[in-house]
Length: 331
Ligand code: PHE
Image (cartoon, rainbow, N blue to C red):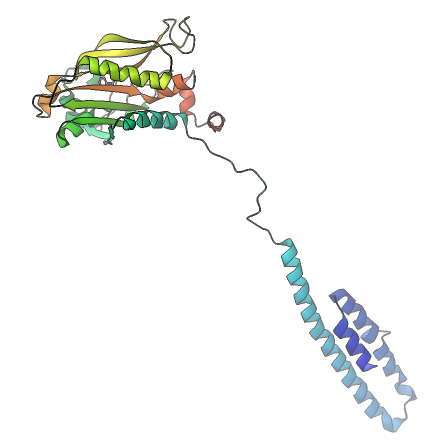
């Protein structure tokens, strides 16, 4: 009997099955329990021996069941963990692909164009001083751009740069001509309406030589090639303008890509859109940075403007709202 029980316990494959076996042997009506009932038929002198024997069997069977139970539960837990384990590398959702913000991609496009022509990309501080932002750029103290209306001042001398032109000054103070550089970056002005934000991005350009002569014609050609590369088949016009640091100066317009010059809200019904300011470097600027016998040209453009025109985004504010629906369109 005992051997059969032990054999069954050993062969048992699951803990619920083992429980049935336990009940069958040790339960209220179990085979071993019932053997205790046979006591009454045993002669008195043998009762002690019989009981001792049964108790030993009971202990052995109980131990065997407990041992088997532990190993079965271990196996079962292992199996359960294996089947319910989460495979973190198994990911069914398509990856959420990001996109470059149109300002960033436009900035990259401009930078790539000029670096392909060997222009050096130069960085400058956002917090500038009066000398670099105004004084050295031939902006006299009475110039309206210095007005508190336009400039964020920290104190009399420290301010947030209002344009990227101070990087021209920093470059001319540290490098010898020939200089061929662009300076992309953030600029700040106290201005906020439909077409202005207090922070926006510019790309400055500067070319300086101390040999030969850089003329307005060189500037014009460079700007024309650049704008055709950026905007494709557009008409370009130069309008005489004024900047304290360039002479002569021009503002450059392209034909409105929104209405094909029929006149729309974006071009204020003029058919033209202003895209950059430029000019031949004023000799007063060279004097401020102690460069002699030099000539050059400079230009500055607003990156948001370019991004709006390239991607036909009619409202400047959408570029600053951090709405992912805008970005999704640029994936
Ligand atoms: N710095 C000028 C601006 O912010 C742009 C400019 C740069 C014009 C260089 C001429 C030459 O409007």
